[in-house]
Length: 417
Image (cartoon, rainbow, N blue to C red):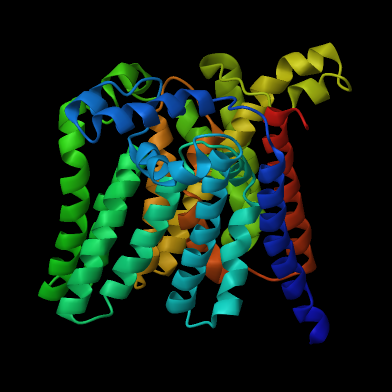
């Protein structure tokens, strides 16, 4: 029995150690703002000059996300002076708070003590793209934190009396509104919350709490969207133009499947028939891609180019694309089956649908695909997978690999210096 439990302290040490290492690494990174960081900083000074006004909102430049980034950094400016590594440490601190919020949510939803709940909450450290968005002064972590906090608050609100629940719902709506102002895809949480009325359609108290939750969130962001005449600042509206990009959505779900493999592969439903279905699906998509679609995607191409023949590398992007599409479809189907299996647990459905809709929002991002978009769904994936998380030595290995990939992806921006 002791041997079976031994991986748990290993995972706990790995998660806490990974967070501490990221913190120290961020302190060590003294480089001037790089990558997208220099784009967001001028808008902090713009906010400082004009405040939350129309002048500020319409003149946000080189930034598709909303003004939450500016709200957060103007608060910490006396400490950070808008210099590195201070501005990067803001995100590391918010990541730490996000872990605590996830632990508190798991503790309440699964009736665990805090230490036991902390273990699945630390799974967020094994999500590779979290390292990039946390170790740099980018825009994803603030809305991720407020979205996770809003979920915790509405969960507690639904367990409380009308008065206490209403106050918590208002506070949860405030957090959701800030999250949406950070990155507009979090708007999908509003329609996803409708599932909380399932089996409770006659419950007036629940209707009231959800109305307050969503009304406050929408009251905060809709006026901004009206000023922008869209979901992003007018100077960046071109990034949302062009309709739908199916391939970007497929990539988002494929990356989501990768996170499931790292955290809780038991989420996937697999048997011999499933293997045949996956194989058939792959060859159908391969034939379609070679003849009609011509989607190409080539991860690790620089490394593989050194060991594979030139002809193989010409085919590689067209071979890997249908594989990723097959994985994405498999992930979606398994998620729908898990939703059906737990259809009476409405809060689980709320979390799952929120995460899936956030991944699906990549269908509307037409100018490029980035794994950073997948990071937005991280807290919902962690919460949804918590009941399926098995503490094994294999999990320790996968956890470590996820952190190593995250570290390497972060260090590529700093050139390992």
